[in-house]
Length: 61
Image (tube, rainbow, N blue to C red; front, side, top):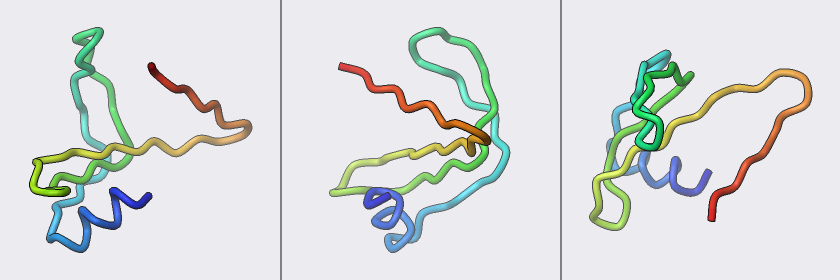
């Protein structure tokens, strides 16, 4: 949420219902919201999907 706030305060562009390509699988999928802008001087993109019912959190690393 902090990154999205920083993007928005820096004049980021926000789009709804956008198809993006996943880096790992090279498959296209739709995201609900995506924001493009700069965070700490780096070009960044943050995407969000809404979940209904029980949301599932995943982590990588």
